[in-house]
Image 1: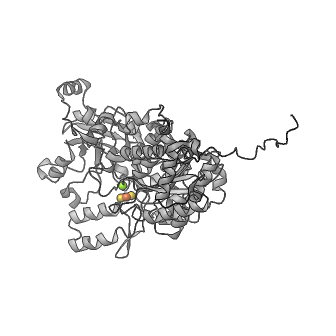
Image 2 (image 1 turned 90 degrees about the horizontal axis):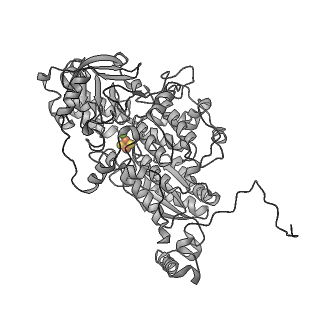
Image 3 (image 1 turned 45 degrees about the vertical axis):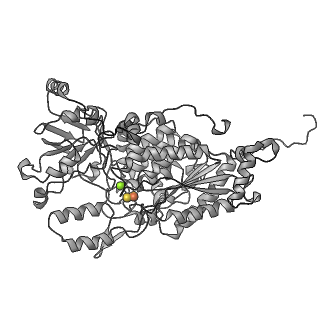
Length: 589
Ligand code: FES
Ligand code: MG
């Protein structure tokens, strides 16, 4: 009315771009105050002209590059490619080095520090002038840590997965990281290969920058990130040293600026449907058991409740279609990539996905998958020829694990999936290492190896001790698998009949703390049960006699961790990070 000339609102146009958060820092004129004058002066000090940054979206590039992390050693260069993309799109990129979680080098386990990196991520993004974020990572816990922190801030965000390293090679054989390291270490212990062979293997196992190239924890979680919609399509399997990886990094920089303009924040992507699809995907990939813990924790940060039962229920209707080691028998991530990668894989299960949800690249996952194809049915199987008829993870219940335990049964010897045997108990990993080969323990292939003191608090950090070593004497007899039970985790590249994540853990008085050597234990994976065959009254007597172990960390980060970490079934996040609640705007202060 009123004879105005303003056009009617066009519903096909996105709303006008939101006022940039960074304007609070850089806004111009006297009205914006002394602080913005200082911020502009300090940006001149950084060497930038006003026209290079004023009014442009500030994109934080969070880089987990480090000299100590072979999985991320190429990310210093990749950050340059991201910057290229951001500049081309009219944004202003700023790189923030954040701590690195190297699965190989950090002890007792980077899991102890996942929540610390998530806090660093969250607080950096909140406390600096940031409008959007690009997260660079991929080695195991890096992916959940970065995404958990980013989800808690909820800015427009793109994840750049580090990409798998080149396949290993040794004497004409293709080697998978982790998986073949353990295999040949057992061969060495069994006396089948010598030290010279081992030295050659050292040079052949890991041949380039990039994360483990099996379907281990890294590949599983970057695939989860892709199906959640926070990477560009197909990004998660691009080999780390392929020039396509550089282009993907540049395209991610271009894209995040667009997301800022559209105001598309993480919470629009990280919905219950998206997490359900992530569960479906990691199970259909035959992925790492670690994904169970991380997805539960990631979902909670996005306000989505995911439980162990979601995994078990989904596993029963999702076949394993990716023939990638260690769940599959033959291929590695590069094969998976050239077979069509995750987009190709997802075209095999459209009926099991929520296709109407958005991603960083498309308005719907359906649109995103339109160009996707499978180019090799041996690597990405058809539905009528699966690697396994149901998903790779089973959730167990019973008096030994009242809050659940998990087993990657597709990586186990099928003969052991229903098994009763006497327990041999180790109170901690050090004791296990010292005594496992002691013949006086009389361990047979029918025994059930039990390790406790290795959970979120007992480990601490729930180290990947879960593939307990087979006694050397049995290895020499040809035994390659036994039933093993622990409150630890297991590397995504490990294998065997290993019951993991027993909750509650022994350190807090879970029933695992009450097991004694000689007790009979029954594992029944088809029935999803794990039972300690000891009468309840006897267990009650043992509980009365039990004393809690001493505190591990009397001070420092470890003490903070111990005071706040939750058990495996709820994701091992800190209680104060997982809960919803308000955080003040830092600029208001
Ligand atoms: Fe980094 Fe395996 S050691 S992904
Ligand atoms: Mg690993």
